[in-house]
Image (cartoon, rainbow, N blue to C red; front, side):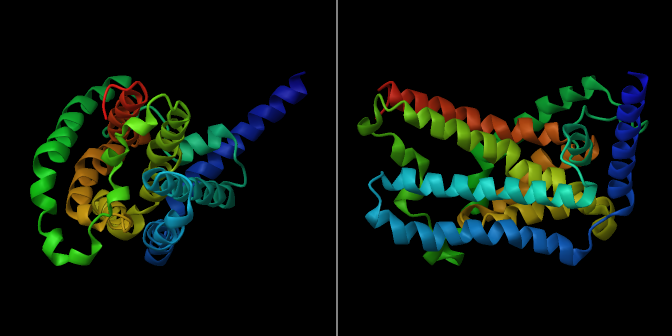
Length: 277
């Protein structure tokens, strides 16, 4: 029994050593950062601007649902890319190793580097900022995109509000779609890759402004919705990337970003129950 316990303890220590080495000495080059960005951004653009228009006329599903499923597929691909990268770096996919490598940990005090759950209180002002940006300022920031990129405005099926239709009343399978979408959008997809995989490895190139570069990359990743590029860059700059880097905790970004998913969930439930539409 002691032998097995010692082996487990040794294995855990080796994993921790590999994670620390990967974080501190394995910083990405600019080429690696841009390569990972392209690996997830270009498929999303391809799905939105090429695949969706090609298959929607032949799909038996509502155009908005078809488009939504394609976006989920793109975000699921980000999850696959994240796992492959982490495995290549660490040689394992054990939760303890993934958790440390991708900052899925309690926020850490910037001065002492010690975990401190009370730092979660920082979520309150960050959530307030995110709400103000999304609901009040984003429209003004994104307005110039209408005349800068007139050919790249959203198609009707790209607006989730189009799903507020009586035809979806009682369609409980939609609840499964929205839950899978939330899982990959705010946890296993975008946040895992951009704030979990990329952000801890960008300091070698961008120094103390790695969180700014991360936000720009995340905004530019939204090639599938370029009309929201300015607000995406600014919101993710402070609301997602800054707290994740400041407190070395991806949960700070996941929670703030994930609140958006709660609104989508409520809207879909209201549609299913026949309260809207």
